[in-house]
Image (cartoon, rainbow, N blue to C red; front, side, top):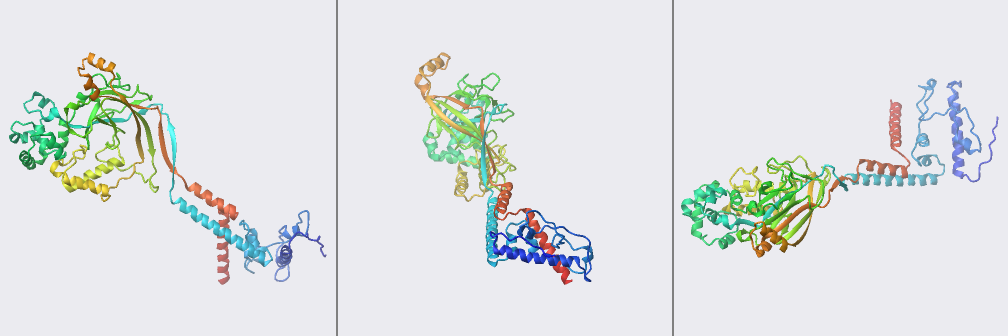
Amino acid sequence: MEETFPQKSRDRKASYKKAVDVYRVEDQEKTEKFQLGPNNSIASSHVIDVFTSSDADNGFNQATVENNPVKTFFIQDSPHAKGEGTRRETWSDFAESSSLHGVRNVFVRSSFYVRIFWFVLLLAFTGWVLYSMYSSIHKYFQYSIATVMRIHYPKEGMRFPAVSLCPMTTFTRTKIFMRDDNPAFESLGLNLPACKATAHVRKGRPCGEALLCCCSEHDARDISMALGNCTDDYKKELQEVIKKDKKSFDDKKFHEAYGPSLRRMIIYNTCFFAAMRDGQCSYEDFVPTMTERGVCFTFNSGRNGKEAFNVSYGDTSTGLSLILDLNLNDHLVGTFSEGIRIIVHDQGVYINPAKNVLVAPGSYAQISVKRKEYINKRWPYETNCSDKKQLKGFPKYDSDGCYYECISNKTEKKCGCRLPSDPDQLIDDRICFRDDKPCPNDVFSEMVAGTLDCDCPLACHVVSYETVTTTAAFPNPSLIKILQTKGYNRTNDYLRKNLINLVVTYTTNSYEAFRQTSQYDSGALMGEIGGNLGLFLGCSILTIIEFIDFAIYFCRTRHKKKS
């Protein structure tokens, strides 16, 4: 029976008309081959209902169901047809059913120019997607970092920083010129082993003067100006004795014994810290620490069995407050300035003298502190921080302490002695003195030049303190009268030239935490690649699996044909 079809719409292009007619003929041929066996008999009684695209093209408003058994890549041969032929699979079948947008137009459209247009378009978008995938992967392996800042308000309070006071006076006149027969010589701890070793050369001269003349690492020109009796002959005699037993002179202990005394510097009953039991502090709450700039005294160090204090309120009333008397008349050797260095740092780390605040005598100095914490990223990110590296000389690792310990170890290896500022945990050999000074200077020069190999990565958790200092003249006439009334008998001029009122406090009961995060992680990588695949090709991971599945099927079919 002859079928009639409505006239095709004029809007449809000729290429579609040709494609539809061709596929109608192919569908009829497939139906006949499927229904008739080799002897023109029915090969299968099973009927597959298919709605073909040609029905829609011929103007049917409703779906027409035809008994057209279509054999494709996704519909297998009937059991009766197995062995009589292989699966009939073509690229056109796969293109018709693929979820990749545009690929069917390369095979289905009858116009050669239209197929070329779609092929070029598909090729261009595929190239762009591959380029964007390469760019995304390259960006991912750059391991870029973003920093997130948050402000924390801890309920339990904040750890108060360690505060180190470093006088600019290295040696005091009173101790250096004190003779051995002075009753205070023993009580002040001035009778060092080197004093006994050089007693026959000194012949009653002060021990401190002799050791400063011959052996301390200070500049010889400064010492010659400070010591009138330090002649070349006297110096050589002393050095010959020390060279016989170099361990008899310990420059570190010499600095600690003959340097300024904090007990004498803090005016009685003027040291206050609210977190302590009675709100008062004394020189006993400060731990002496040897540094490159001489002896410093550290408050709230957390050492010697003392716990570090927390404060729950940021105000001058809760910080450290004390009045210091620098006793400048007792200054003998030190820097060419008068005053004191204040270093605010974390507990257990290397005290870096470069991170200091200078306070001049005759001033009220308020140091406002802001705590900051930095959480850095480990390898393979650029910061490449480490939380496993340990230092022998410092309880807590930081890069500054690592570099210092590296210099100390290189000095010990090259010069055979340790630096006077080394922590006790590092000292396993004698302390360097003046004759050894050129060798440690060479090691330090290598460090500055960058030729010294030190493996000092950034710490993963860094605590730093930002300081802002404000000053005013001190003391005023009223305070001078109060001090004199309480028995501190000094002249007005002396008090204005020697006293310092120091206050170290938090500005607020909060701290800033800077955490490094991955700016472009695996989620962002997959999102960008997936977005480009969907936008330009309309495909997904399942589409790629379709191609892999088809390739496996195609290879297996060819292999069966050959066999």
